[in-house]
Image (tube, rainbow, N blue to C red):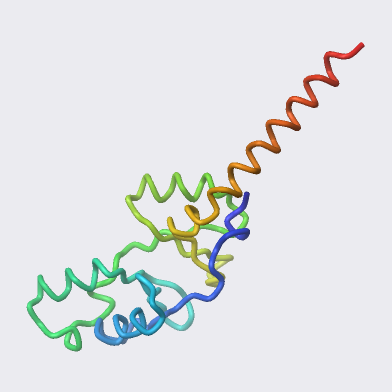
Length: 145
């Protein structure tokens, strides 16, 4: 299965010049746990709920006084739409992250999250069974005289 098969295509973004308060408000309005930070449409970073909490606690300043580009997670890790879900999971596990923006060239086309992968778990199991059955048929056909 490919990333494009389960990614979310509607991505909430926030301009790099905004404040953490503005970005957090977008997260609340959309009922999501992160926003992608962009400049001129190009994804630069991601701001997560944890980043918002960290910005508030560490700076001790109101979130409206904290620039979003200072609080967001850098560098941004991305994946292509034609990558396998397995490679996305490996990249998330290796990087200790739960969200991967999906890009083609430098254009943002979606986002894939741990939640997306969990929601499609039954699809992975079905695909694995289908592949196993196909391999068994191939083995049976090969063993016939």
